[in-house]
Amino acid sequence: MKNGIDKEIEDTKKGINVLGILVERKTDILAFTAFLISIGSLILQTVNLIKGPDVRLEPPKQVLLVSEKYPDKKNYLRISAKLIYLNQGSPGYDDITKSEQAFFMLGGKRIELTGQEYVESGFVDNRFKVKKISDADPVQIKSGGVVVHETYFVPWPSKTGAPSSNFIEFSEFLKELRQQPELRITFIAKTFSGTLNKATCKLSTKEFIHHLETKHWSAPTCK
Image 1 (cartoon, rainbow, N blue to C red):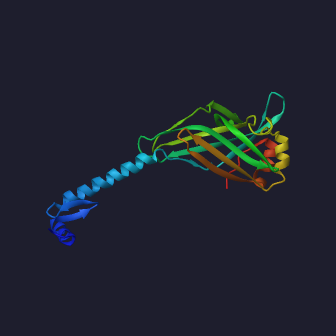
Image 2 (tube, helix red, strand yellow; image 1 turned 45 degrees about the vertical axis):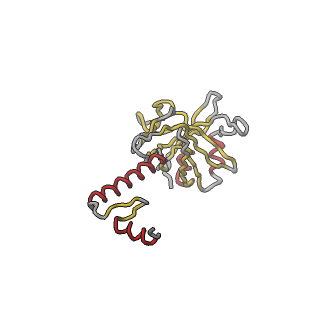
Image 3 (cartoon, rainbow, N blue to C red; image 1 turned 135 degrees about the vertical axis):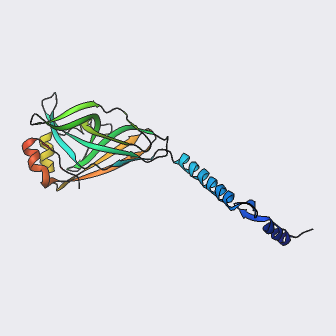
């Protein structure tokens, strides 16, 4: 009976052990290379299968701050920003936007706004306007694709604090803003696959406060 060492020597003469598989030495090198490539491809496909969609939210380059009159005759703050989504997931793994929020701290208080409409802001007949394109319904983000839209964020009743805590009058917003050197707005985007993305825009108060006070709107660039 052959001992373990003799058997190992004999197996070595027969072939090469790769990942527990004995490959005969007489096997053509090209066939062996093709075998390794197929194994690598199988592993990559398995990794991609587990990975699924991979949605990223790019930080906006600019944010619109604007005063809007409500039925109670008061003016409240609204904001908008152009959001860019990239899906770097595997082919066939699409995703769908679920919700978009934006929040910032002002005078020690957290203000949260909710994405309600997709809009287009700009000048029409020499007047600055925000034009509604559609409601902020879910949008499909295809694998390898890009989705871009401008979202209009508005105050909704708070679910955790006082119902009106997210509604800040524009005059109060200006008053508090003058007391702080910058405004940091964080955008949060959720998808139906469970992805949660955050992107922050930092605005320097001194660069836009005068325009905001005189025009009641401003679109400063993010730092």
